[in-house]
Image 1: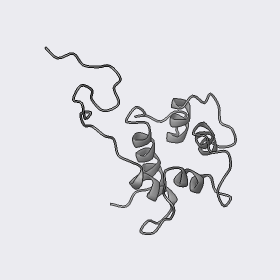
Image 2: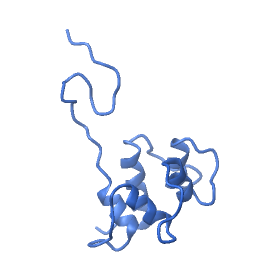
Image 3: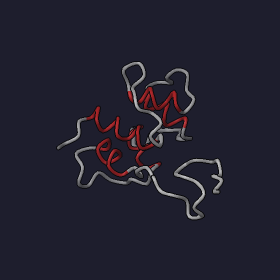
Image 4: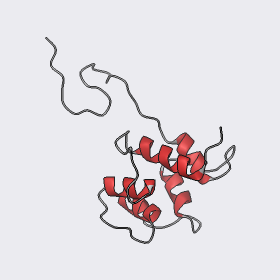
Length: 115
């Protein structure tokens, strides 16, 4: 099944937020992620706001989505119809695994106490 732009954005936001963002804000997945990152209003577009929240200060080749992809190490769209589909597919998936020392789960910071 081919991803639509909206589904690609939803997939990216879910993965990038570590599964924390599960509903859109203002009808937008990008607005939801930007507010999750601490933005209170868009600066330009919500995509630009996400980029700025992540420390990306300028578009790449005139494109904020291309700059965001490069932030994640995605340098081309080979095999994908566009940058959004590449981003949705290639952002590191959630790591639902135990830490190597066996006392935390995924991104938790609390040390588990074992009996």
